[in-house]
Structures are given as structure tokens and as C-alpha cells.
Length: 88
Image (cartoon, rainbow, N blue to C red):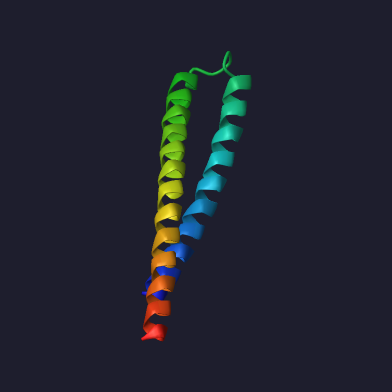
């Protein structure tokens, strides 16, 4: 159980880092497209892609928050289980 929790935490950390990087990319794209909005014919497609990616990053951030809470609960439960085993 402890190994699985450690792997889940490591995966969580990687996903969180990747999500942060993706959010920064979206912000940079928003700034670039915003400045060039009057000069590019593909702006509508770019804005649609940015909006869709923004939605995905927000959903992923919400999911990470929920998963972090679950990991915390699992970790606490594992600690309780270990303490109970030691007392027996």
C-alpha cells in the first residue's frame, strides 16, 4: 500500500508540474494572440484552441485538487492501519 501511495504521489507531482507548464504556455499564447488579433486571419481558430486548452487546464487543476485530497486521506488511513498493527 505504501509503495502504491508513493507512486501515486510521484505521478501527481509530475502531472501538477506539467499542468503548471501548460498553464504558462496558455497565458503566453493568450498574450501573443491578443496583440496580433487584428493582423491574423487564423486568430479565431487560435482563440478557440486557447479557450479549449484553458478549459482543459482548469478541469485538470480541479481534478488534481480532488486527487490530492484523496491521497491525503489514503495516507492518513495507512498511517492509522500501521499504528493499529503495531498495537496488536
